[in-house]
Structure formats: structure tokens, C-alpha cells
Image (cartoon, rainbow, N blue to C red):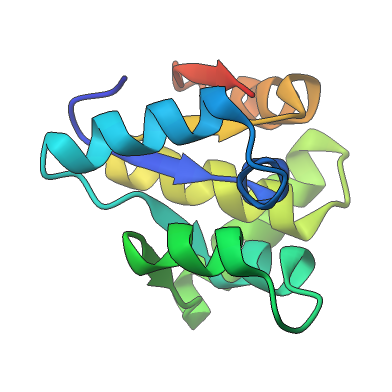
Length: 128
């Protein structure tokens, strides 16, 4: 786990709702170290399907939801152009993780690596 933090992608939130043990183990470890994982607002929108989503709601209580500002939006747009991957949510996950020095918790390592490659940043990735 990164000492700076964790960023969850949509697959991580879905894993939480499915009560997948690996995700919950990573989450508890982060919280025990005083780390509130970051969930970009687009990730939440992609994973949320209305209530009740009890396990996801429980996970979100320990997370920081990050809104997107204009500067981030421009950087994300540039990364979309550079990476050739039009998935704005995955690109936002990587942009934020690079900016904060976070590891990424994902079910889609290939997309995260493809985007990270154009940033020239080394992002620790935890598969769930």
C-alpha cells in the first residue's frame, strides 16, 4: 500500500458492494493507518445504482469523495488524448492518483497501466 494514499476505481466500489474480502482487507488496512481512500466523484457516479447499497455505503463512510475542478478536467482531457483511452473515469482515477502519489485499487489493471504510461509515473496497483 502506498504511504501517501489509495484511490479506488469503479471496480473497487463494486467489489465492496459484493463484499469481496481482498477489497475490505485493503480498506481496513488503510483506515488503520489513518488513510482515507479517495473516490473520484465520477467513480461514485459509475458505481452508484440507488439504494440501498449497504456495503458500498459503509465503504464510502471511510472515504474522501473528490470533486473535479476545471484544472483537473483539462488535465484529464489531455491524458485522454495522449493515452487514446476515452474512459474519463479511469483517466480521472489515474490523474488524481498521480497528483496525490496514491496507489490505485482496481479491477482493470490494463486501463490504469495504459493511462499511467503516458504520465511517466509509477503507480502502485492493487488488483481486487
